[in-house]
Image (cartoon, rainbow over all chains, first blue to last red; front, side, top):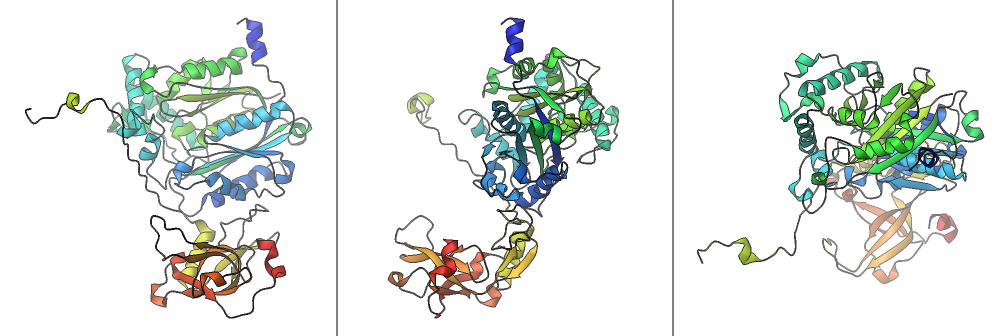
Length: 363
Length: 170
């Protein structure tokens, strides 16, 4: 493909801005609220931030998974948190909210609508997450063995060490930095300042992964409003624009992948045009510390890029929302003037199987 | 044969059973907890929408029309109206009630949404829309925060409700 053709391919047809973002408290276990009660304050806040109501929205898309609470159609009842009367076009992805955002963005590209609400919610606590996440593996060879997500991630970390791409010290350094940065994130669930040497004295959970390299288990929700056309200007003096957006997937079979690299992230980064300009901030959805190394390489980020100033998924990992939150956090850095151009990343599936890349710019 | 079965004896694998069972803890949330605590005391507690005034029972904590929290508790009557019904004649796995039996949507007086209840003490061919029914609760010492606290609904003896009073709730 010629450079011009590649450029044309990733051309954003219609500028879309992230007009508002909100997230719930991130907690280990919210056993006080049902999904609707968890979501309602977040949806109210995302509207109140820019002084709008549900009547200003043309489309709703959500990301969640019924496997997490063991109840069918929880995404339908979750709509009660918005109150969709009169009826409104609505969709759902059984994916992290970042993919719901992508669907809304595609619809906004078509020009039929000007504003969309995206939200996601997930409860890690009602069931056994180790068992639930085993069921996303292939149902013939892997799922019947019930491998837990930490063991699966440990295979990836071991492969990374064997390939000479990272060490246990590197993993600890990422965890130490992330949780230290999380001290300034009021929504962080795990935030502290512990030096690498101390972290390395942790016991292994599954070798070579120590406790500090694992994400916390989190209940939480997040919401975002997207705007295009006049509404983008109306709802923000300094809009944060999505200037590149793509997502890619790799094979379901862990044995069919080189777990030390992420070609799907690299492909998505290429289509989204990450390398078209300098990146100031990257919010990467790397639930396990070692995955940041893989993503940094796939996205072509140099050492000058600030990675996960929010603390990332190591600070809070609300299932189904942690990816959407990366995009919200990156947008916040641009809105505050701390960054001019940022990249946000979301992942889904075991060992970074599916990856989404979103480039954001101010003006 | 040495008594040991080998893979060759068994032939190729043709089917694979992979039993899956997941256990969950249900979180009713604030609003539904109030409903369940009400059942424990032998009464129905709904919640009113501050915007449209509708009373939901049980409430999930929001008005699905307006998307705002329902915070005002409303004690509802023990009597209501059958808005629609079904006579169950088909046996199925796990069935705990002798067939035929009547399953009906009951609109409690004061509520703006019906919920499903078992109707007893009436021949199945006499069930009808508009029938006035009352809840029959388990003995006080058997009350729990569960719909199992309501044994069933039975005819209250009042005249049938006028269609106009429940036509918006079908």
